[in-house]
Length: 142
Image (tube, rainbow, N blue to C red; front, top):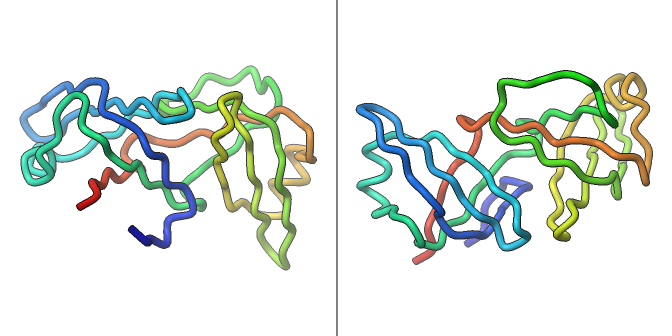
């Protein structure tokens, strides 16, 4: 499967909490992290999603927010992945920032150069990728 989303996390569904319109789907990634996605109930049926089914969780890099070190903030976003900055590519306006999580998974964000400066992001620094559950798209192969 080829997609334009910079982040593609392979894993298996660990649980589904159904709702009338949306369902909450938890995915255990190959790297040992848990991602929570909110998808429509009709998508659950159309994709045949169930516990144990392999999926790919897709997240576009601009949808990933970053917090530096221990910001002391609490977020409503369900997915908060702590890692270390291992990639930092500065462009004219935006930068690509890559975090490596403890299990080896990489998460990429595209943020403004001002944000990189304000957060003091640098290679080797601790940071957290923050992803809203509604920004995760689930896909199945085949």
